[in-house]
Length: 155
Image (cartoon, rainbow, N blue to C red; front, side, top):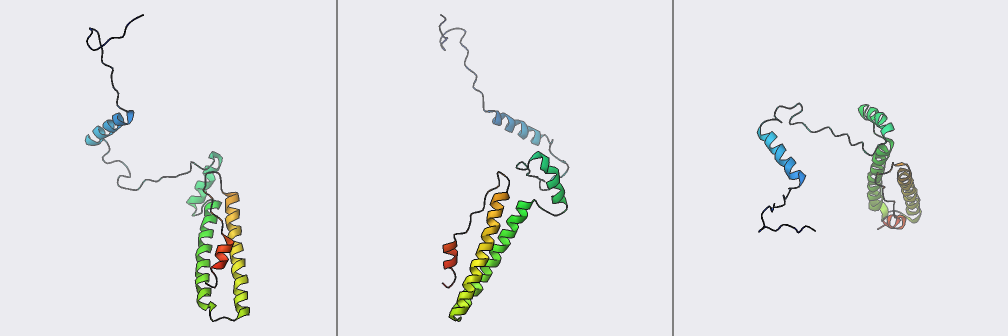
C-alpha cells in the first residue's frame, strides 16, 4: 500500500484548485471586449430580438412566427388579451353600477344583479376556456370567486 504524500515529503504536488468555469468564461469575454472584438457588430445598441418560442412545439413554431409577422398572436395569447379587456370593461361597468345603486329601486337593482351575474359567468367561461386550451407551460389564470365578486355590487 502506498502512503500519501504530505507537504513535507519530496515529490509532493499541491492539488490544483480550479476556478469555476464561469470565472474563466468571464475572463475570456472581458479580454475580448477589451480587445474590441465586440465593437461594430451588426445591431449594436439595438434591443435583442428574442423569440421566446421554447414552449411552442417545434412543429407549430413556423405557424406561430407567421402569425406574429402578420400581426396576430397564438390563440391563447389572444384569449388572454380578451380576458384582460373583459376584466377592465367589467370593472368600469361595476364602478358605474355602484354609483347608481343608491338611486335605484328594488326592481332596477335586481336587474343590475342579473346583468352582473351574467357578465361574471361570461368572464369565468373565458377564463375556463383559456385554462383548458393553453399549452403546457403557460400559466393558468385564476378563476373568479363568484360570491366575493357578486358581493361587490351594492357595496
